[in-house]
Length: 65
Image (cartoon, rainbow, N blue to C red):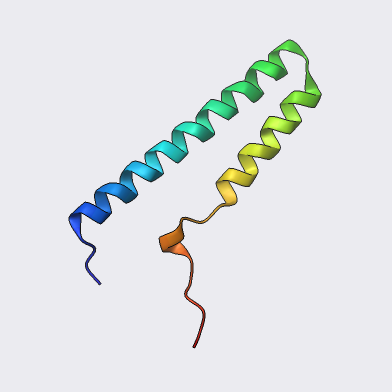
């Protein structure tokens, strides 16, 4: 099924924003690890894992009727 170009542009923007956020939190984890703050590093890495596991709304399967 073809996706409207405007909808695709919004999806692309949303995905890029999500990936930027993941990269930012990954940097926080790296910085915490470099400082030896393993508690904060683990917390940030857990957050990154949760964000990566999230499906985008258009990737979710629709429930069977």
